[in-house]
Image 1 (cartoon, each protein chain N blue to C red):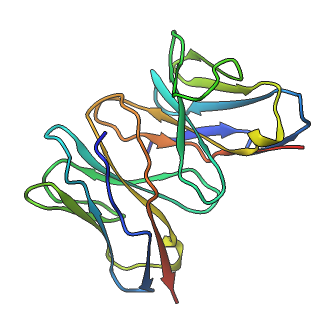
Image 2 (image 1 turned 30 degrees about the vertical axis):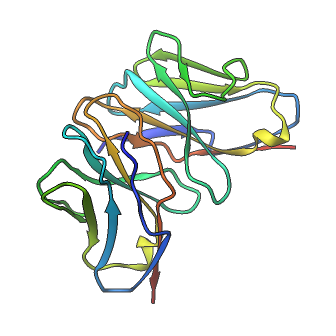
Length: 110
Length: 115
């Protein structure tokens, strides 16, 4: 799996959009970008994934640059419950393992 | 959405005993499940890949005789920590793969404390 680079931590004010960046400059053509988050003492929760087009679901939006070397996860209206560690992972198609990096610890401030 | 159930959510055991952790996919079949371990303030570390009907594949440095994995059906994988020691105390998390275009879904983890 290609490696990813994320900031160690970020703060965001409650109600504002949280923008979490991720660099994956060595991503290969068949690898997807996945985002998960882990709230303290729970298992990781799937958020969103994409290949090259921008994606949106009920939780977040994923913006992938045209060269696919980086992406941004956007939580449009952050709440206190969004405080968690967010992991950006690149993974090929199919039954392949997810390799977790250190992630970004996002803290939502009241 | 896909649900993965992990049991127990926490367990305390004495040193030298064995502990079994179950991972079930509740509404889908999973030919592949993954077992992770997470120490405090660290990221998840993959321990092994569990394949239904065949032997598990262990990551480098993970003792297969200590961490026994059985994937007896398409909805159940078990991890048994044998002869547990205090250094095995950790947060164990499983995940299940529901298909080629499905994201991996994770259980809520099992916190193991060995005294």
